Length: 68
Image 1 (cartoon, helix red, strand yellow):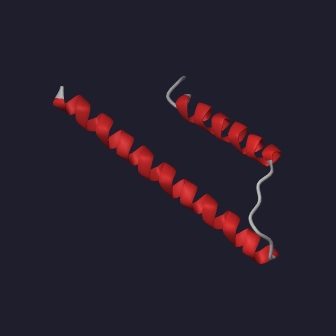
Image 2: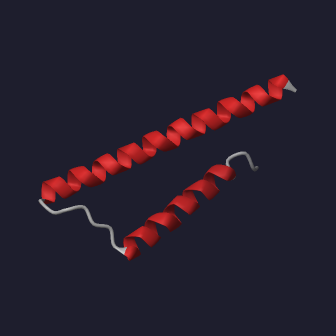
C-alpha cells in the first residue's frame, strides 16, 4: 500500500510543478509581449474562452495517452 501511495504522490508533485512552470512561462511571455507593444496586458473574454477550451482539449489529450 505504501508503494502505491508513493507513486501517486510523486505523480501529483510532478504534475503540480509542471503546471506551475507552464503557467509561469505563459505569464512571462504574455507580459513580455505587452511590454514590447507598449500596452498594458489585456485579455478579452473571447481570448479567455479560447484559452480555456484549448487547455481543456490539451488535458483531454493527456488523459488519453495510455489508451490504445
